[in-house]
Image (cartoon, rainbow, N blue to C red; front, side, top):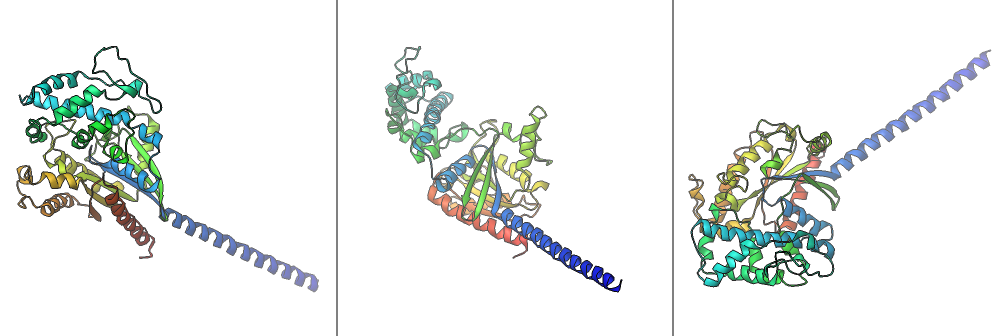
Length: 407
């Protein structure tokens, strides 16, 4: 009996040791999985691109494709032809409308005729092709109908180029704060002969300068070194910001008419955000909204930034502030005084003082005392964005290490 008892006791001890060893192994495996998940989370970054319309958000997304996703293929480039041609035509028609509004006329008589033709011109969207040229025979029967591949006809290219070089144009451009003209219009007008040529294939610069309104939320995923980045570009026009679904006393919530899956998707985009890149166009200090001609764009951006930075959703989020379009700001500041729109500014035409003043206006809104990392940017310049994003990545990594307790 004693031996039996001894044997039973011995067997129980061995089972206990095995159980203890299995528990330790299980505990180690769980700890390792938690550690691996934590490392994975630190390597996976969710970035929101926020800002008002035309602040440069979508251009940043295009740069990420160029820098981190091997750029655009020929077929992808061709998909931008219609957008670019529309940008040019809309801008040319905008100039004509501004001339008429200000009761100005082109100096050259031929350009008065061309102005009428530009206003009558229409692009035929369904005739665009990414492959072989197809002659568009428009029922309008005008020599100003859409050209080969649904593009700009040689006649309208000649008309736009001629009007752009009319001596009256500098005078109407001096009043650009009084009407809407996209920032890329001068670039496209200067390139009109190349862009209007038969067989035109957009360049990367053309793609970066092209403009189309972002609707909803677009997602971009890419690798940058050890980081896996998930970037969300959120539409910036007022009609799109109603869909942001950020609970804040300053932001309009999502419309109940939006489908529930869409609203849930938008809420998901704002969860566990690593960083926000908030884009501000420095050059917009004298411009008005496309949606509301009486509202100053810079003031609109300030209100929007205040809503974002003080939202409870982003209490542990780093705010990266892109003071964008520095090239346009440098060109504009000597001609259009910043003090005309912000009377307390006293720095004159000094670009550094002007940029610092605008930065100060934004940082003053930071009641939540979040960390703000400002950068001067030119979104259409790939070299600039490559350097800036390297600094942004360093910020993200440092914050991840800090949050993990390593720093």
